[in-house]
Image (tube, rainbow, N blue to C red):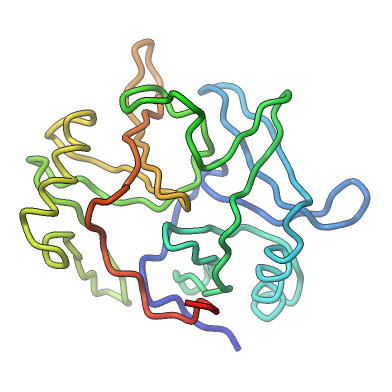
Amino acid sequence: MLMQYPGRSPSNVSRDAKYSVVHSATGAMEIRLVYRISNRERQLLSTDHHPDLVEMVNSVKGQLHGVPGGAFYVNEYRDVLVPDTTAGRCLYAGNYRRDLEFDYNGSVISPRPPEGLQPKDPWPGPHVGIKYVLVAGGNDIKYELKSGRTRLEHRLSDYVGADYAGELARRISEIKGSDGGRFYINEACEMFAPMNGAEGGVEYIYLGPLADNAWFDAPDVDRGDD
């Protein structure tokens, strides 16, 4: 039975902001990442090491469209979300706790930062993540839930209090700036943000891990052994 995800539903349209289940050259199904190396260069990376995840996504895709394959996200709670673009929502496919790792010229590309990466460094990982917004002034974080013509704004301070929300927001604003703007958090709870590059274009910058900072409550869904 299809279940609408009760939490934040991403709506990224950029190809490198999501994972996809695709057919490989052999006809088997695998997971693909569009890996952006620069503003002008992208690589298609794939892995066939996650058959359980492929099955989770395809179960929803089959019920939704009648055919397997297509885009999906994994959010910071490790929930797998399958977009239903016709209805402007995401469907819940289950919870998946393994990291997705891809080989790129002998290097591992994953949602975790490479050893030694520091906040303010360029983010070399996938751009797959869930968008949030640093509020102008740099003292809070927000996102919106849409239902028909209604938009409901959720602020981190409403969940954890102004002090804890401000602590994380200030960490981010020290790098991104107090004007605010969008940033992303991935399935490993690592944060990164698009910023204007020194030579034009957009550069993704590492903001650091969520770590012990307070965050939005996880939506109430079945996560198996939780």
